Image 1 (cartoon, rainbow, N blue to C red):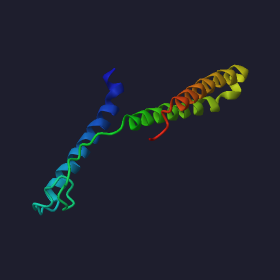
Image 2: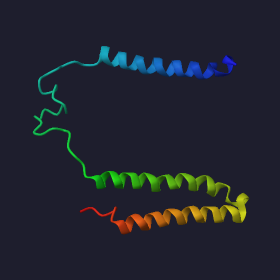
Image 3: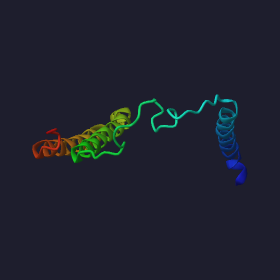
Image 4: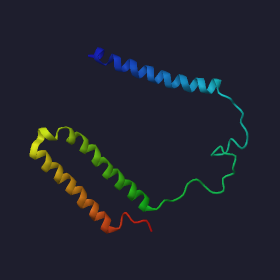
Length: 118
């Protein structure tokens, strides 16, 4: 049974060795010219005026979550579109219910004002 996974383990070992080797070669052969300006957080030579940590509005996170939810919808549409002829009317009704549910959710969040940036 272990012989079934041997190619995967060999591939994983090659990948890890390659990643470690590239990192080691970069550290060994790479140019080094440290300076005070390069040691700053952004390595741009500009002295930071404020902290890099700042608060984001909750609407930013809500919009990001809504984008992910409605973007994942397209992942379900592609496999359905490839076998819609085999599913016949059942597949069309099922996808219609799925799209209608998403449309109801979109109308709900639109009316609640979650997509408005104030």
